[in-house]
Length: 326
Image 1 (tube, helix red, strand yellow):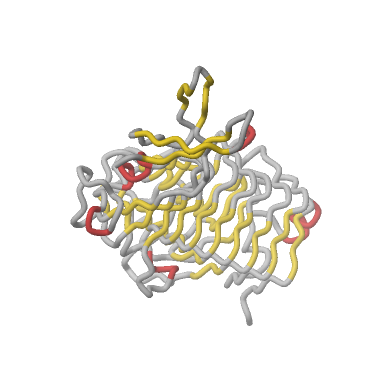
Image 2 (spheres, helix red, strand yellow):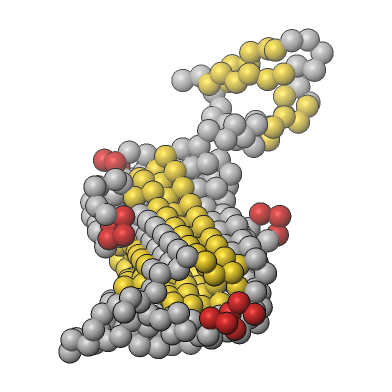
C-alpha cells in the first residue's frame, strides 16, 4: 500500500509525495537532488513481553504476539522516541543481564492489583549466577519489575547496576525506578542497587528484600547528586547491613532520603536475624542532604554509622525521623 509523506517545498507551499517506501524517523533520502530527513515525531511505539508464552520470533506489538524476553523488546525501541514496553506477569530467567540501553523508554509491568511493594515477585527477572540481573545505561523509567539473583555474590556484586553516560555526558543520570522489588532470596550480593554516579535519579516506592541473609553491605549504594530515595521499604537487612550506604569518597549533594521504612526481624532459626541499620555515611561530608520522616526501629545513634551529632556536623540535615519508642 502506498505510503503518503508530506514534505515542505522551500519555494512553494506543501506538496504531497506518494511513494511505496516505509520511512523510519530520521531516515535520510534524496528527493530532486536535495537531501531530506524524515523528522522524529516522538510519538513512540508500544511493545509487549510475556515470559510465559511469548516468543522472540513474534513482532512484540500486542499481548498475543509478545516477545519472550525483555531484551528482545528493548532492542525494538528507538532512542528518544518515547517507546513503552508492557511486561506481562511471569518469571524471566536470564543468562545475561537485561540492558536498559535505549534512551527515554518506559518499561512498565501490567497493573495486576498487587501491592507495589510486593508486585515484583510476580514480575521477576531472575539474574544469572555471575552477573547483574540488569544494567541501566541510559535514562529510562522502570516500574513494577522484580529483580533477583541466582547467586552473584562477592565484592562488587549487585542485583542491578546503574552506570549511564546519560544526557549531556552526566554519569548515571536521569533514571526513575518505581515500585520495583529487589530480592536477595538468600544469596546475599553486596548491594541490591548500585549506582555509579547518579544525577536526577528517583528511587521511589520500591521494596528492598534481603530475605534470610540480607545484603553484605546495603540495599542501595548511593553516588551522588540529586538522587531522591523516597517511600521505599527495606526488609531483612540483617545484622551489619544498611538500608542505604554513601559511596566512600563521594559527597552527596541535594539528596532527599525521606519516608522510608526499615522493617526488622527477630532471630528465628531461619537466618533472619537483627534489623541492620539505616544509613552508612562513610563519614562523608554532605551538601544539602535531607534525611526526613523515615521510620527506623532503632535509637537515633544506632540507626547510622556515626552518631547523630557527628552527622549534623558533617552537614546532613535530619528532621522528623521516627526512632524506637520506649
